[in-house]
Length: 159
Image (cartoon, rainbow, N blue to C red; front, side, top):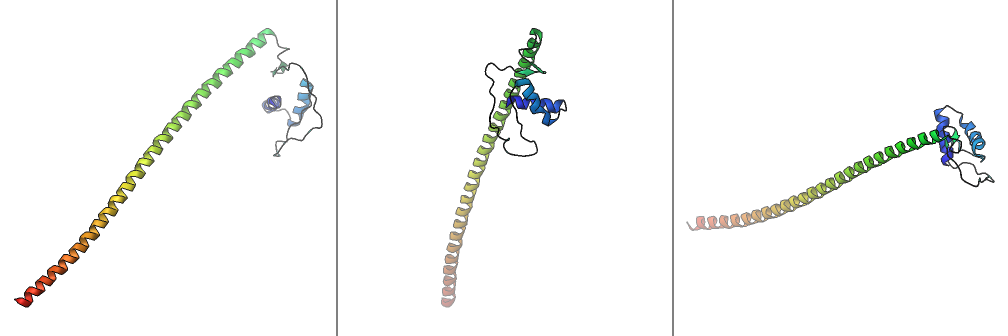
């Protein structure tokens, strides 16, 4: 699969026909290759039998297998691979830092939301208690004012 992806990348870079890629894979590796059609979704067509090449498989770089490369070419390839490894490690570190920042921001925001919700609950409770006190005061005022009215009426009748 990795080899197929490599050849697809080469095909894209060098404007090689997509249909020519399987023949190139077969020519270089001796293995039959089938690639899924890029316009259709789903699995690639199944083959009845696959030829398995036993032994050590060598990677193909710049059109040459690693077995065919000279010592200088292999050293250059190793340098490129190390540079790529360093870049990948730097990117991984960067993305881990970004993930940690986002996670910290998420936790801070979550905590802030919980605090705001708790404050909102407290204010609602205080408002309900104030409304209840107000109702009680109105009831008491109504009772006391009706009592005062009776007293005044009684004084008028007497006086």
